[in-house]
Image 1 (cartoon, rainbow, N blue to C red):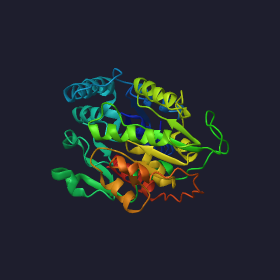
Image 2: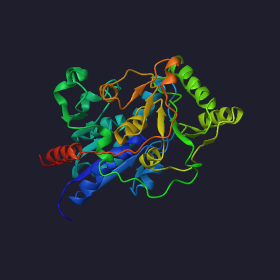
Image 3: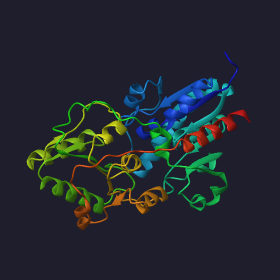
Length: 344
């Protein structure tokens, strides 16, 4: 034993696994013992396993459909985390996540310092009073955190740059993709139970699918949020003779994006990943656009689809070469800040 305290990291959703992985790698190199917990939600556990993380799965699977049910699920899992970590709390220096509400609550009552990364200023702030330090990308104004603005620390970059730094394209293609001469379109639908879901976004999603179905030489790669959504999308593609592929296993998201000619999303992470990698990216996200998305839009790296007429903005062509030049500034700042908190 090197005498260093442990760091507890929690994965509440699949994108958090990507964000926290380079930080985990850094902490391991520096000799810090790690406690990794994960929520059984979406492909979070599968992605942890794919990336080689030894995790403890805490909390019952599933999610609430109403706001009240969602809050109860958060509280229920927070209690489970509290019980799981109680016996280890004296050896833990820090609780770290990308906005895990259950971990924030559990860590507070365990008496642990809490550091949270967050890149969307309109997310639920109800538990942020228990956060000691909030790390955010520079395009988000501190004022958006209201009375918690003094806890905000900017880092010089975007969340996606934390883990896309050093990205190397695969040498061979992914199984399941069709002829490389086809226009490959990756579509990540919106979640059916997200707080930002609206009738307008459902109309937009339908309009985009119809637009793609009317074009020749398109192969659609679908990443549905759940099995029921996947079945509905598969039926549409079959009925409209639109070639499609729904991967049946957890894939390397950035590597998949790199194989695409364009990406269309109703969420946030994958459209931003595409934008950072230099892949044409279109978003029909129906919630309030945050500072990061507006920053990418202003740079021309992310195109917003706000109404049905905007589907004509989608350019269905083979893309040219992309040369991502991603700085390590964000990762160096974040890891340095976290280690500074641990040593206090």
